[in-house]
Image 1 (cartoon, rainbow, N blue to C red):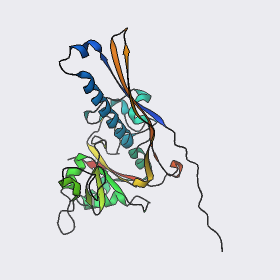
Image 2 (cartoon, rainbow, N blue to C red; image 1 turned 135 degrees about the vertical axis):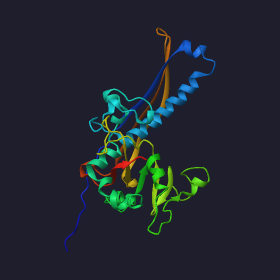
Image 3 (cartoon, rainbow, N blue to C red; image 1 turned 60 degrees about the vertical axis):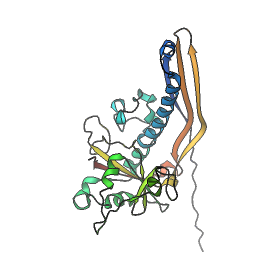
Image 4 (cartoon, rainbow, N blue to C red; image 1 turned 180 degrees about the vertical axis):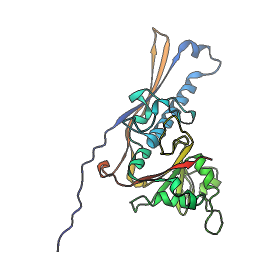
Length: 273
């Protein structure tokens, strides 16, 4: 008999520093009728979480896929300048999917509009047998509420935790899961854009299209080298206080990226209404 061997590959995952900072004049802190610094700390941590989610979905280390300099998603925190833009921390799911496995909604809209087949069309692009989750934003979520099966019944099944008031985290549901379609968990993430062009990228001109992602969750991990540390510094010369939150981490896939496995897929050119 002939033995069969599986090849392994070295895959180095480097850490990147994610930093968010605020600077405030100390006179403003003293003159405010409310406690300003706790509010700044709260907003700083929110910016940290929003920035990480934005990078996981829309990251592009080259900064060439989308018009990042002009892109403030959903009115969230302003974009950085050049290499400091949060979406250049690491390559996100949209970039990987557009390069590996994608389907244009226009190609199926005539026969499959408003049905669960939209979800199936993007899921079937995945190669893995390890299951799939589908990521949508709020616009796609509301469209899914109207999906029907072949018998005209509502196809959407809410997660058990939704009815209890806590989305995700309940028995049988994933964190962020809002429901299921054909057994596939549906996760809501509003870092998924609603202002793309018909090719699935942001060009600062055509901003009327959305997208939907399907992911093999076992293929991707958040790698934390150093948890979030918050520090403050006073500049007595300029009478300012600076607060900075910093974390060393990465978001990367377990398989070697050179293999370009179809562990993430995207349907682009979706309507947003």
